[in-house]
Image (cartoon, rainbow, N blue to C red; front, side, top):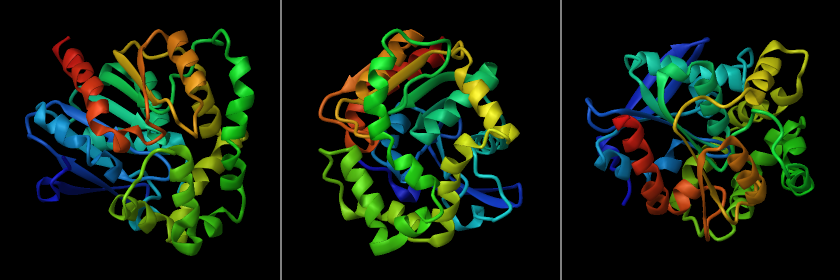
Length: 300
């Protein structure tokens, strides 16, 4: 079951000198879910999951993160998670600012955590895919999983390098294809599934903008970097929270995910035979856990 593009509205929002884009689907009076993609991906990562959400009565907004569309690329723009969080808050306000559910994958999960911690009264629930909840002190047993995570995160310095955009765009975004395969080793994705990401990462401008996220992580002289670190390490938001991960995730250690989820005391699960892009790999299995979480939070 895939999303029917004929039912999807494309929205635009102008802010910070950029033209931001989003997809919106579902009943106009349905509870709002904001679904945030990560790297190297697009809102099409939700295509298999959204029909389950719409079928349960939800309206779903799927923004492209800034830098992932031609209109949101500008040399003078910021590409850090605080700027992206402000974009999502602006999208939420554009739709009237109802209490909403925020769901994030990869970078989108970090943005979801920021939003939830900044203003928990705005949200009904928080869902994190492939990224565990951070903050609230040091988790017991954390340290023994960090060496393995350091190896899995070896791509980050590459993304921070000056040649990252050239690496990403060459040979039809072959590096991105390789990341998908390494991070989700059991997923036989199709060319149609890969095509939206390939469009982004064969464009020099978008490849430059999307790698700026990684460069912004360690620029401690910048206030947004310090704000992000402070918020990330703060205690979790007092919201119904679900953390989901794939047991074969090649980007974020499943053991580290489990330790941090247990430390945070949130509802969590790990899906067997599933890697980093779990919502695209096994949308039915994700929906079986996500939809009850959203419905329970809405009822509460």
